[in-house]
Image 1 (cartoon, rainbow, N blue to C red):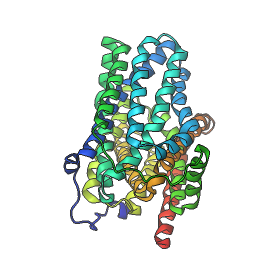
Image 2: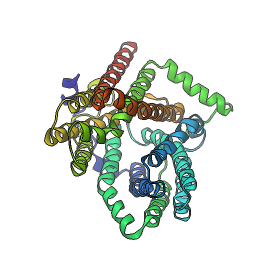
Image 3: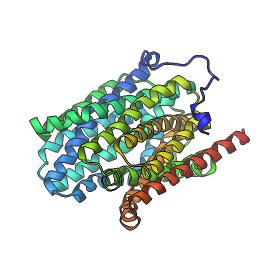
Image 4: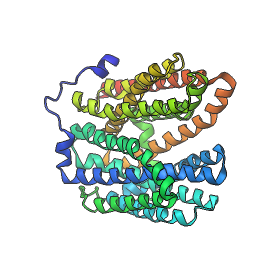
Length: 412
């Protein structure tokens, strides 16, 4: 499998570059909108965490922000998916951006009230529940299947670089100008995103032959997911990955302190190593394949990440840990790109919103379970056991997805 992952895909002699994709107006509009909103998100994430910590003075209060982001996904994903498949998807995205702009603009006026801050955090996440599956559904309508890897790589790289560059800047803005400006920058980013989306035109969705209830629409998506062998396997892969990543991501700081014996500054270097790997991963990926259906390219990254988790639980030393985490970041980004590209290529157009919303729900539910159980496991069995288990879950995710892809090839 690893050989397949690193072996250059020669099925397509010429590949579309990000530069050529950006010359296409629909993709350029989508890329611009999502990149600008990522800029604002970087400011909002840093400012919101710092604000909550200043108001509550506890790590539990900060954890509440994560919970506030997850709960709307679990509650609204079925409705959001059905709505995305009913309404024009670009209009859904613009509406979500305008709602988020209003909420972000309002944050400075309630920043002394913890409850209202949490409430707005819930609202921002709720709007994203509608925006994200709509954006995922639009992309395969504006680029060819063989361009999905390059298109997703462009979106992912822009998001990672935005986080790496702007998160430290957000901290400076908060320190120098206060929380208000960080939140207003986020609000402005959503307005700019909505403006960019006004220039995005996509082929019309197929007309509905008959009207059905919201419940029936949501149920239809779940039934299709259960019946489709490959989608069912990929859903299991998504959930197993979330069970691993939720705990290991949150508890990396514990591993750094208790096992690697690193200080706070060194922990920052570990985070930077992940970011560096995540940024270069898609750039490498687009040079070696444009086929979103190759098992090695889709599932090899899960194997890499699983092995890195086991290595991190075994080794000591800053340099070796940083090297391992560069590989982890590379696996995270390339895996996200190829996994999303495969989903976009495989899911029927009329069901995209519901399927993508369901995958978001699986990710967040697995992440929440992992966050809750990871801390308990670390206290009972030690932090190294958490990372060994996380690695095993990622290998299980790769195996599950590989079986699904293999069976899909047999069916075809």
